[in-house]
Length: 458
Image (cartoon, rainbow, N blue to C red):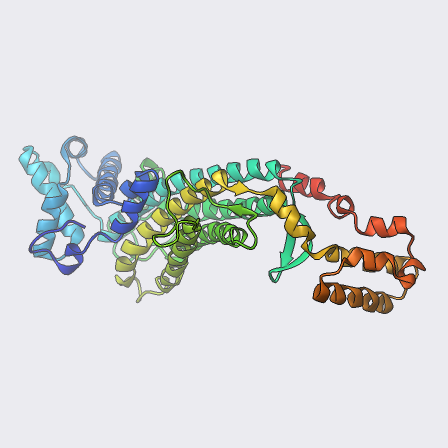
């Protein structure tokens, strides 16, 4: 909101999105911030009002010359609007008054009689908000598509780069770094569909009046107004469009943010000194610590993880907005002035930073292989168990035998494979060739290509 000496408290504070907008203007495109600024908000309100006048003129309910004059001369001065609002304490009334003043200045006061004709505040606010959401959704979907493209490229780059698969943070079985990114790709693709579906649900307006009964403007007019705006009319509304669609949108954004966090969290783990398998980009001249010159901290990854919490936190507020008193109260309105801009801007920012992270991520295949070999063959215990069972040993007996060798190797850092090859009980069921097959990396990862075919078939 604007800052004024005599402004109301909520007007004196920085815009809800101001801090976030500063970040996006510094690091990414500013378009998303502009969608949610005051100028665009009231421009959307004005477009809804003019579309209504033109549609009503088509139906003969508003003079044609009035609709033409409104299209040519209607405008809003945001600073003047705020000044009026400080007096009347109602944003839509301040808006219509500010527009009427502009029409008077243009010598078109007569036409301004037909501005906001037959409409209630939320006819304008909810319908205009849908326009802002559509604008935001276009940028967000483009951001998701860009991240999908980067993930696909790098997944194929490292499709066969062997890495240690970990469960509970402990070495499990061989994996590939490409599979990790293919998994992220698949998850993000589902998130894209969720966002597209949620945005489509919100692509609707309502011009049905104070309690949604079309007491002053008929359904045919609403259909024409929404069509002019590229929206569809809500099948039914009270004074407000039901907020389940808004909650679904915020939920979809939170899921995208969570996927960005998932990627960043993994890179944070892989960048640890003891692991060093991958790390976020570190620019020439960048400093990691004021006290320790050797530090290369995953600061962007940590920022992504932190800001994802903010988007997730907005989900609860969006769900709380679903339940309103009777046909309308305004408890949801103040909340949406914060959570819609912040969630859209933050998600756009998180997508941009995650694209930067994945696209510039430094990967160390040699370190991956070195870490994989740390346990000297322990990671093949599962295949060895199966082969012993197939070779004729009872499964419980085979499990006990393999685990005994595994625990001894774990404690003493002895060579697990050598111990297996020298055990007569094992050799009674498996030849050296079959033991070698149990420790085969190619055998473990033989189906990576088929997984990639599944993920990237489309």
